[in-house]
Image 1 (cartoon, rainbow, N blue to C red):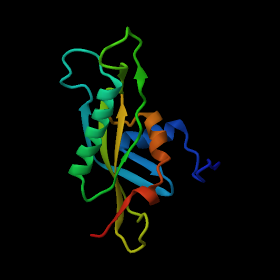
Image 2 (cartoon, rainbow, N blue to C red):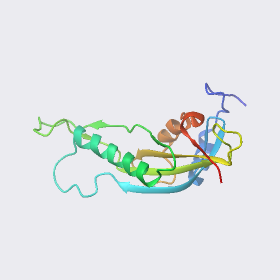
Image 3 (cartoon, one colour):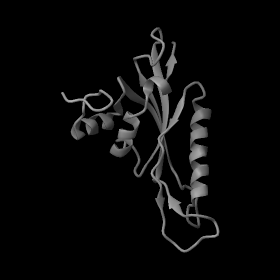
Image 4 (cartoon, rainbow, N blue to C red):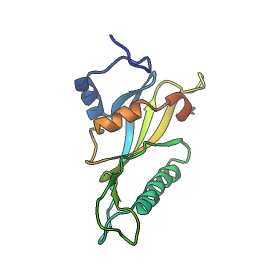
Length: 159
């Protein structure tokens, strides 16, 4: 089978979709499974006005902090979201832009240790944004998740 630049087997779109529907994904040399998933509407509670760059920066930091607080025993990683500028007249509140509608906070686990060979497993909490509720994980986001350096980012767990 052909390999990509990360020395991984190239996955057909059909196989990727099948795995993503089950919450399974290959990151580096690790096969990982989605073991928990929280999802929220990004703009829930926004009653009036248009989201701005500044507002979105705060939301991204808030969701990442929420993940870090809820999973303080595990490392957290942010997949940078796609930002879409909104063309409109000059606003006193700043540049208008949209994030994807849903934020996902997923805890992923691998039975392979990331760094310490005597560990029982490795875990990583990944925060990402997509336009629809998961599952499946949006394919463009999945490509970004697959590029994460699991060995550097995941935390080894001893049971």
